[in-house]
Image 1 (tube, rainbow, N blue to C red):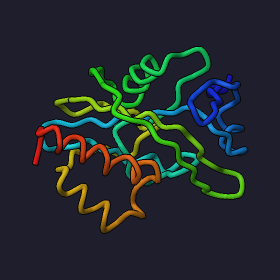
Image 2: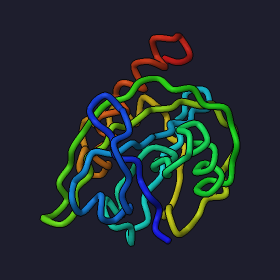
Image 3: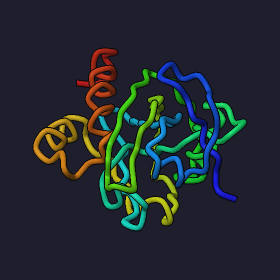
Image 4: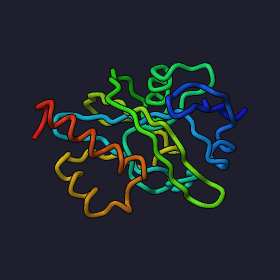
Length: 175
C-alpha cells in the first residue's frame, strides 16, 4: 500500500490524507522534512537516485521525506535516516518553510518543510534505491557551489541550505 501523506493548511494543521503519488500529481500542500547533517565544518549531501519520480540526479541534503498518516514528525525523521542512510543521530528542528515547485504538468511539490539539523561522524551506509551517492563537502565550498551551480541542486535544498549554513555559522560552530 502506498504511503498516506498528511495534507495540511498553511499553518501546518492536518486537514486530510492522500496517497503519495496522487498528492504530488495534484500539487496538494503536505507535511515534509529535510535533515541536514554536519561534522565540524563539513556537511553531508546526497545525490538523489536518477530514477526518483522528481529531482532525480540532483544534489540535496542528507535525508528528506514525509511523515506518514499517524506518524509524528520526529518519529519519521528517525525512521527515514535509518532507511536512507543506515544511521541514528539526534536532530533538532531549526525552522520550517513553505515552497512550491512544478516539475511537469503532472508532478508538483507543495510542502511545508520542517528543517532539522544533526551532528554525525562517519560514512553512512545509504540505500541505493533512494540515493546515487553521498559526500561530505566543506560548508564554504557548498555555499560557493550553490551560488555558481544552482541547477545541480534540488529546489528545497536551494531554499533551506543558506539558512542552515547561516544558523551553523552564527552559532559559532564553524567559519
